Length: 298
Ligand SMILES: C[S@@+](CC[C@H](N)C(=O)[O-])C[C@H]1O[C@@H](n2cnc3c(N)ncnc32)[C@H](O)[C@@H]1O
Image (cartoon, rainbow, N blue to C red; front, side, top):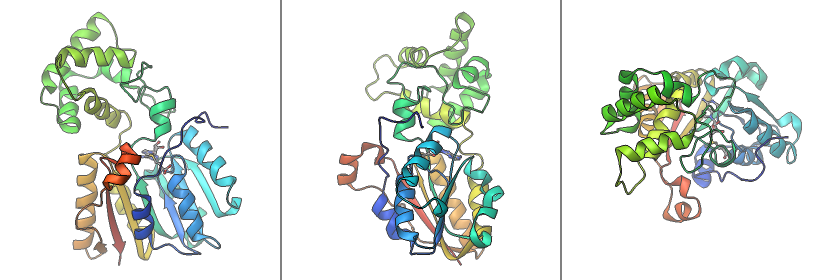
């Protein structure tokens, strides 16, 4: 049984995702970020009978949770979920009928369960060990990184992924502090951010935590190649849908889709990203920064 038991992740932009998926019975779906199985559940409702869903998540607890949820609603032979990074999806393509699919879907970032009950230090609001690994089989934790990265590397990361105006000062403070005492918990980092911004209103720890999480999980590096790889196995008129929560990720999705269009491989369906309505944001504040882009194969 999964350790994620108390919270449910509400799937973001669900109506928009379904409207843009063009699914019907018999279609084949890859959900690269299955999380709590929210979107997958609805995909399966649309593709059965006859369809198949292959899901991925690098968090083993998410895989267990999604498997439990989907198994209680659908036939076991209509889906399979693998504890693996979606970047490696092609290793499992043999599981699909005809080794092809009609939808490649990514809903990037973190799930509610990871933030609220993983105890891995994803949120600055909770005092937990500074871990931040989505996949606990990976070696480097956030504390390891803060205790060992060079000042230049840290400065670069805070600039690039947090657009942090005080990135140099922050890196210096981190290396000073670790000479006195190594980083262990989220509060160690929050205390340091408070030194940098003693009078801050919006908590700058949000973007600093996000930047560290992106590095620890190597979240942006392989996105473009994964999308390109997906175009090799997608059926004609099949769709790729990506929801991202970070401007760096959204930029990669936008340019990859544009370039694939220029190369004659398909077309961009969303000239501008789709965002959540006020109503959805009210019900689910984590939809606030979601941007969804859709591409269709030639
Ligand atoms: C926002 S949640 C997905 C929620 C899901 N769509 C739902 O409705 O329940 C993102 C999930 O993607 C997973 N994830 C992030 N990057 C990943 C990657 N490169 N490969 C596989 N899973 C990843 C995270 O572990 C997390 O469970």
